[in-house]
Image (tube, rainbow, N blue to C red; front, side, top):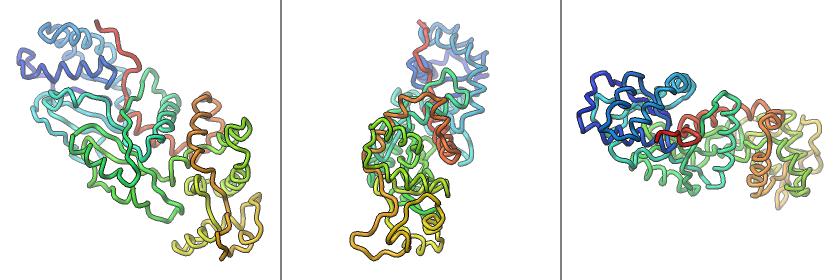
Length: 368
């Protein structure tokens, strides 16, 4: 995360009560855990104050060359930290939920535990690889050169995600929690896990984000699945699944967001959802998607069969790992070519959050 040291004009560096937090903050940057920004006058004062140690002094001198770059970066981020050097509190505060920053007193960083890299709480640990790739794609496409993103990934454990979120929040550690919406229809509410979260759930240092798509697999471009089918990294038995969801999204692009990629969609399930939300969203797709294969109950839009007839089969539980392996090998240009606008919008939202919370230097700067 970008950490900005503010209200430095009246600082007396001979005051040794300031030293623990300053040493920890400059150490956090030096170890590649966070980015650090302050004004040039203050950084020069730190660089000249030998009592802070050679490493801290040299780090401050190095950071003076990064001021313009990090000031520009600050304008792009949607969340960062301010350390108020006129305020000795250990509390983190965000005066308004719409603010792009939270503020801590300098004693917050007296504890070296608070300079560790932020936690990324996912519903499943396997989600983190795709989130990492989304972050990388976002940075390459939006001019974040020379910036890395680092997180300590934590397993939410599905239904236990809210409990684990609360445990991290109580520790006052930095944490971003990313949640599936579990929405299978655009007019539905969020699922049982996401519904446990609201604005009051968050603190200044621990926040959640519920993405609009049903699940993380919804973020996989269909072009990636096509590549997998062609190179056999995705079983050919899923070709029909691909053709059906391709037809559905060609007619209605946002179907990609609400389709259950692992389990698929039954005819009766779709009709039931449309009735519940008084919106023939899926039935409209079934009727009008030109290349959708329709027969039997799908053609009649009526199904009382046991087991229920499948309208669009799912891809199974292995689709996330197979797809992330493909994306990992793709160039930014190639991925952009197959990225539909509706998914690009979702990748950008998530990518900005990940970059804001996890931004760090890609390598440890030479400050010895």
